[in-house]
Length: 107
Image 1 (cartoon, rainbow, N blue to C red):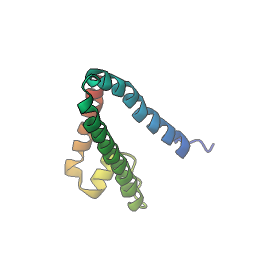
Image 2: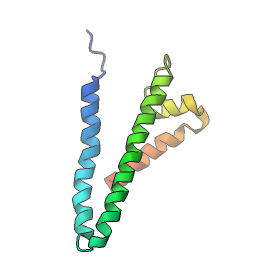
Image 3: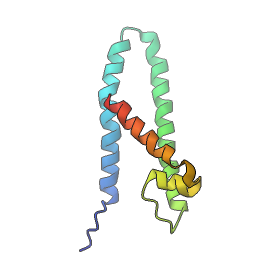
């Protein structure tokens, strides 16, 4: 069987977009409702959101670039890419950061 538990590029892209957009769709209206009566804050908040969006896009680009540059070394996780590029002694930081991000989103 050719199904080895991996998903295709289109399915992976859809799942990533669904996860990112899902949290933004819930957070953005709540944020605008909280500061909606202060119109002087909407422009800086919008600019901050755009800057953070670009930083997020650049981060995903760099993760893909590092994975591609490793060539024959199959990177199966973000901490694996960190371990290959930086070193094994600090790769646990990435796992902790991912855990704290998820924990923070759940609160």
